[in-house]
Length: 64
Image (tube, rainbow, N blue to C red; front, top):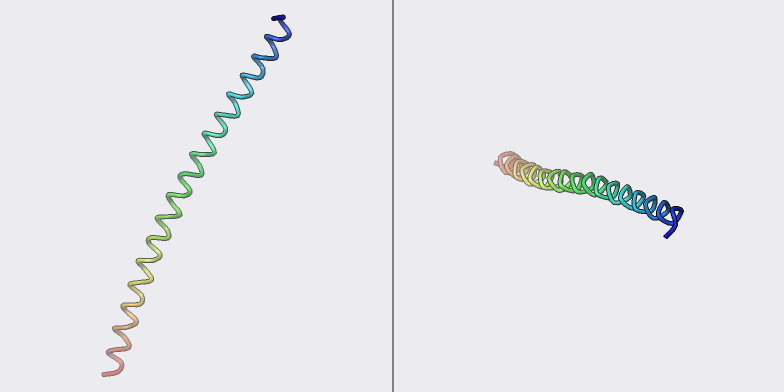
């Protein structure tokens, strides 16, 4: 192989490595976002259930 071919292969390897690193970074960011989103949704469901229970208590006491 000539120097030019070696150079282009090493450039290609560097670019691929850079792309893989970027992918891993983005994957980490997306994964952490997904975890936060799931926690938020879980908490939102719990809060809505509590609100519903309290509304039911209020309506029962108001009817008495």
